Image (tube, rainbow, N blue to C red):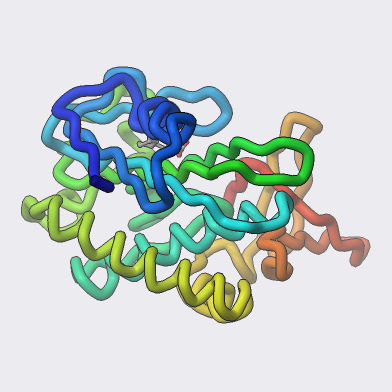
Length: 242
Ligand code: BTN
């Protein structure tokens, strides 16, 4: 079976990794109602109170060059934003590389973890954390002002299972399109969902920060930032302020 459901778990990423190492097939999904050790990017904690969100991790085994992996994070973000827009009737945007925003507040984060050896990918785990029915008081103090949920945006509670189904349908469709035709058609759809492009941004990385104009992404999914002197910097991974 492909879907592994747990009422409570430390992190769906860890469980999915365990299954992957034991030989689970591509398409294996771990989904839970409550995570007690949810992981965000850059070692951050991801809060998933019971009943409120969608926390799931999907196993992929693409035959792909290592440097193309970020494209799959972008592809996942498109599946989620298209679901919010077309299925939930809620406008949302992608903030490069992997945050999804409603009214400039974060509603969803994506964490892609890679298991590879030299240039060979063994597997890839795409973790998705969505705030669905979370109420403002359920967010921890430190994120309350910058986080939102589908329920807050829509003014009513939403059923989670149909949303999971829609995201997975779209993800599968986009993944097949990507394997057959490459990143170009996905990139086109990503651009329709993105908020970062065409804006002045500040990029923060461990190496420091830089400000400039976000011109777009290249064919690898790398963000291109033009500075005042005209030089274009390629940004592979960062926190972006818009
Ligand atoms: C981020 O914005 O920093 C990424 C958040 C990713 C959270 C999801 S929830 C399901 C999966 N399991 C985890 O432990 N993390 C991801």
